[in-house]
Image (cartoon, rainbow, N blue to C red; front, side, top):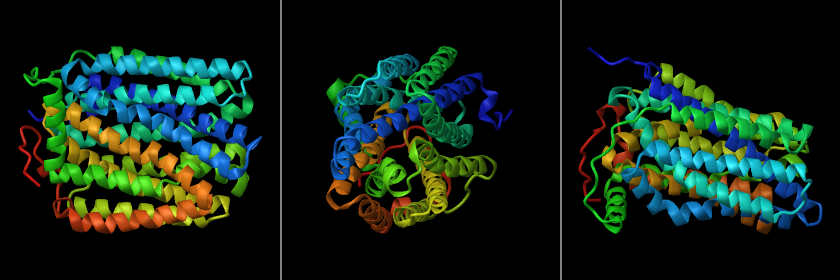
Length: 421
């Protein structure tokens, strides 16, 4: 008897999806409002370059704990119950949301508490991301996994659409409102995670923690498809990340305020969610490697268009295209990484992947802030988009294994041995 085609036929996945959606909504609310508050408070007493630099420091504050904990959390995700790790991480995010709400209710105008909470949020995400990523494949059969990944991406993207838009609108009503709503959403996520029953766990590793760390790094280095997929995302998004500059565009270039900022932050996720929904109905069947590289190139081109635009509608449209192209890349890359990684190593490989993804996002925000402070926000975005296209061409040449990947359903699921690169 063949397994159900839909991952929602499995109760554990339904609970997982609800937790992922609720927690993403909360995270995106907090991230967009923290960025707006830091830039707006900084602009009240500092120049645009100084405020842009401080905006970039928000990304650095979130990246540092991920960088410091990446190998440790991977080992923990492979040795302990991944459900417990995810629950603890969501509880820590709930504490952050409550703290931000308290600061807003008190009318605080200091910047350092915002940076401190951003750092703690980075700690929570460092534990949540690899545990949730490694948990997801245990909830559905391997044959359903690509569809589950697409739906998982939809949940994330829906949260990334609704979170920023709701965060901007709720902040306009009262600064504490988005943080209070985030508290409720994180409580929902926590309850949903407690509804997931115990899942199969890999056999305990006889290796020492140091040997386990080394094994995970060696596996990523030697598996050319995994290494190429992870590193492509790192450099393309690190260089081409336009979202870090959105508070500057919303306040000083497009002049649309916090409401407009919420729409700008939601636009990439809107394009991504529509694309992910399409992928659940019409999964990619052939030439997935070439399609992934093409999507990253389109991502870079859309970034350039956004950087040059002074029209709000064109900026929104380019961000929608950017998000749609990134979704195709994420769908293919996530499927290849999960399907090419044995379950016993998924925690460590997911933690390395998370480091690269976090570097491309949070560290990319820092890079964008520093570059904008040096040459200007528009120049920073345009140069970054152009460099993302260059990276795509280089990776297509350097990783022929990834470029020539044809079908997702041909990828090995368990026990794959890494080939030396």
